[in-house]
Length: 452
Image (cartoon, rainbow, N blue to C red; front, side, top):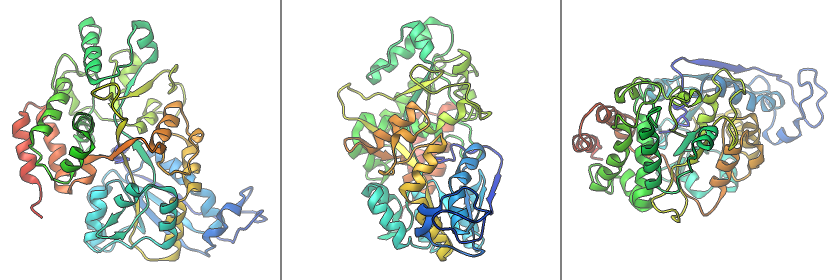
């Protein structure tokens, strides 16, 4: 998935963050005492509103929620729109019920194209305005626009993004032990076996727990292997059910992942045996690297935030820092660069000028640069300056997303119908890690695919 699925960033508690700012018009050099030192020249195009309020809901919590709120604080000051954000780890499970009951927020930050399609099919979404669409046409690729489109109608622009398939490690350990960054999947297997044979600790640390979404980190592993082993065309067939979920090619990807996740020699470093993957929270699963209790952790670019859980900066993310990451390698060293990733989409449940003003800002290069500069995230917006990113890794991630030669595929489970991508696939990962066979798990997931 995708927290992006910022389900992936979601902690098990809800966070509310509100910005209620000056309701006076701001243009050019601000004279308003409330506006302080804010220069509103960049925000004039969004208009001014007297007493307008916009509510936003999503899965983004904790430090990331604070940074999200900060990213629109100047916009709120200059436009007079009071923006109230409410984050919840249950947002994805609840938003359709809220929409059906007429209680949805004005804007919902949806981390799954599949969920967006479900909400659109229910008739609850407001199509995107001309301003939002113009921004997407200028700053985003056609693929990203298509993720926010349902049945020919464009509903939402992308927001942030993430690159999946990073393998986090300690540069100091690699230097001390003479480990090389693997260039192929076979070399990754060799490295993992070397670490296991040395006997100091298990090579990999893994956490699959995420509340109702437990299992999703395992789906990311499978998606990465599907793309690398079989290429983008087969990947596309898989996520659209052009091939069944129990196709031999899917089984091959599962079994390749199983060489790690179902192997007591490989996991779960610093945590326990194979079974502890299911109870270890994804947010904390990589931290044993900091204590030298494991060497490798598979998680997306957004995991940078979790290396300093208290919000400090004692653990640096750099090639010569405390931790860094390399992309899960291809089958062959000279294969084209292929990555999976995720993102969010701010959908609208209320038709109002102030709502579309907020959504237009969120789809702009101005917002993307503002948010990236605050740290911890990336964007696929082509107007983002990579140097605004908060680490060497995130600069690299933005450059990968902006490179026209990169083969990018959205997180597969996020594209699948909810009954699969947000249910049977997650549950299947848990059952599989718990000991069920690949064949039985894939047959069960295949049987859950909606007939229409």
